[in-house]
Amino acid sequence: NPPNLQMESSFGLRQVNCRAKGGSPGFKVAILGAAGGIGQPLALLMKMNPLVSVLHLYDVVNTPGVTADVSHMDTGAVVRGFLGQQQLEDALTGMDLVIIPAGVPRKPGMTRDDLFNINAGIVKTLCEGIAKCCPKAIVNLISNPVNSTVPIAAEVFKKAGTYDPKRLLGVTMLDVVRANTFVAEVLGLDPREVDVPVVGGHAGVTILPLLSQVKPSCSFTPKEIDYLTDRIQNGGTEVVEAKSGAGSATLSMAYAAVKFADACLRGLRGDAAVVQCAFVASQVTELPFFASKVHLGRNGVEEIFSLGPLNEYERAGLEKAKKELAGSIEKGVSFIKK
Ligand code: NAD
Ligand code: LMR
Image (tube, rainbow, N blue to C red):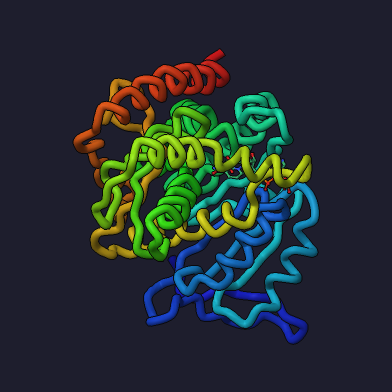
């Protein structure tokens, strides 16, 4: 992680100090799909993150404009733009963290799985680039269907001989963000004080909020549990329908992605007790991938926490979630294996 970087300016080459606030070495972060609905606000927020020293913005369209715009912000990170497949390798070389929101979003009436045919190929190509150019980077995968795109990425990395399950994380943070918000509304609390574990996966019934484990400790009526479970599981569809064909969650997703990326960077820096939910290779259930609380450290996922005690309602939800997840995982694996 070199502390300095050579940058071309109108007055020739200059040295840029690539140190995060406080003097520690900053991290190099790439966003793939940076010109999109999530990518743009995500670029804005990552440019504001004091742990980031270099920010690479890659997309197949419009990165020159987004890069020029974001680069005028007077924060520490140096921003560079990369346009099109021929610049993918330059965008990825040397990166510590790669965040992937590339791919098509849902329209009303679609499931996340309906995005598979287009997004599977996009994720495959991008992960082949990562395997070649920054095989040690932590990967935060946002592109849907996450329940299948994470297994796709794992298979691409296995094929390339670079797979490290600790470094591949499907981003389910938006489910936690929504759960915290909706639970806080019901309890009349500030959402910043609420912590709801959400496990399983990132689609419909695979999104399993553990309302019996909410902090601060509380209890809900059966009616509240039904309402909250349904709203958390269908939060994405709520936004898709409200946007009426103009896409899915972008702003709350960029917020969630930055919250999660910041946790990964703090883990890489060596901060203690960084814990978030993520969809990762896991032995918490019999499935090869599952979302649960993980400890993030210098190597990515350092520890995966078990689900803890579940009540009857949650045990029934877990069985439903596992049934659907198994098929989505298998679909992703066989996309690469075949
Ligand atoms: P968008 O269409 O606004 O943006 C997607 C961007 O990806 C576009 O700029 C497009 O040019 C780019 N892109 C397409 N092919 C590419 C390629 N091969 N390489 C690089 N970039 C490429 O969509 P969006 O609203 O930003 O959503 C992006 C994805 O994120 C969707 O699949 C959506 O379902 C998913 N999503 C996931 C979550 C989650 O919680 N994990 C939340 C919201 C959205
Ligand atoms: C979300 O949860 O908002 C995303 O997965 C996008 C979607 O299609 O719902």
